[in-house]
Image: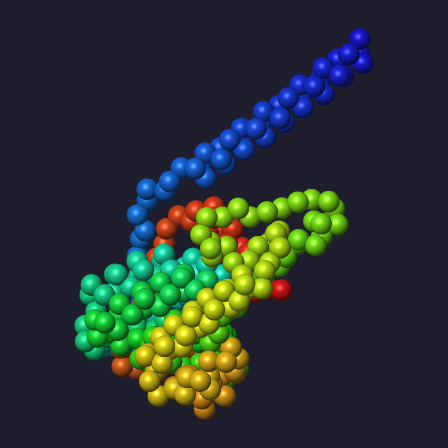
Length: 322
């Protein structure tokens, strides 16, 4: 009888675990299917005020204890009667993954700024991206182009990397600054084409791509690849490369485009001599300089992330770590 009770107890616990697991999976699946109806929120933070308070805190902290109270009162009085700079410097951040998924936030941030920007305002985008899908980065570059079209001065600051699609975005700016060891360039196009056809043949597995349209699929992952198909893919890549080069040349007419559009990348110092960037300086120093003449305002879009976006963000972080 004791053995029977043990078996029933185990079965009951197993059933509870199964029901709990099934319920969690159904909840997750439901949330993945359910569209988010929450509108994104634009947040603005006055960075120049934070920097000022930080400097004042350090300066006062270095004074003798007996003088600190009076110094705080004086600083508070100066702050109250101080007049904020008329100019504004809006700061955006863009960290790019393969699909440039941050473009959804960027379009909201650009729309918000485009509606209030004045002729003497400036937008600084801190950009970090090794590139990715052409159509995704083309859209990201077009979003930045909306600012230039409206006459808003745009500066791109690159501390680590703006390569391939990342540079497609960077070249839209009126002014590009980079840290000395930032990776810049890679104006080229690549399409990895792995093929498992021979491995399938050894296993006795047949695979065919059935298409309508001569060039519906030029190369295949599992089927045989023909010389004609590979030649067509090469032509398509060359066409895309030409569009890329023409776009960069239009944005930065002084560039020797044939010299820099080889698919190579360069560190900031060399990129400066080639004309890919305009100045060597970190984003931190550039913004500190800007704070002397303008209010520095960080602008960010906050919204609920979809499961797909969270997965892409995690994958991008892992790839950057590796």
